[in-house]
Image (tube, rainbow, N blue to C red; front, top):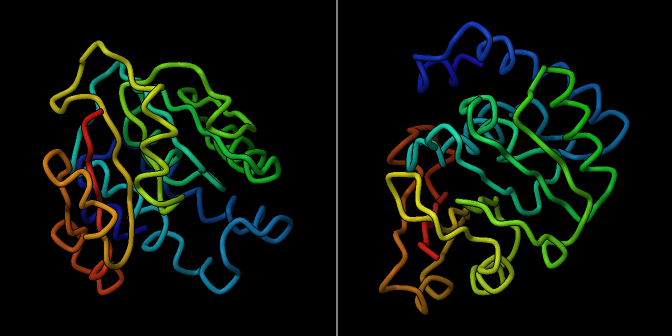
Length: 206
């Protein structure tokens, strides 16, 4: 939790309380339904919450924006971003029902009012959004094909509408077909912990 305060010092009291309560609720739910590796639950804030918030170092969503989180699992990156941007609407989608349930229950427990949830494959989601976000869900080319239909035309933010995904490891071959359009970020430029040394983020206007 101290890491969150360090990198995001402007948080309100409500946001601080919501971030602080994630530890209890994720531990409780993870004991019933494994949404985070049992070995990794002690690294919740660094490996999951802070990693999700790397997207906030790329864009500050304007109030009234809408974002869909593809393959949210237990709620990453959607729930941390929804805490940080309370006036942006986040729609969290996953094909595994029990994971969506965990994300929904945790969002309710911490009082998030700007999230909706859907147990579905992304092919079934027809609505339009300003941005698509995801964390290591599938190869970039597959993700682009899936979500192009969901990008709204109207622009509200400092970056053109599109896709922002968090990835690890070597990405050059995935990004190569989009090299004229994509922006690749080293997450280690945002956060100095060793965990982020191999982490990347890709922004692709669609």
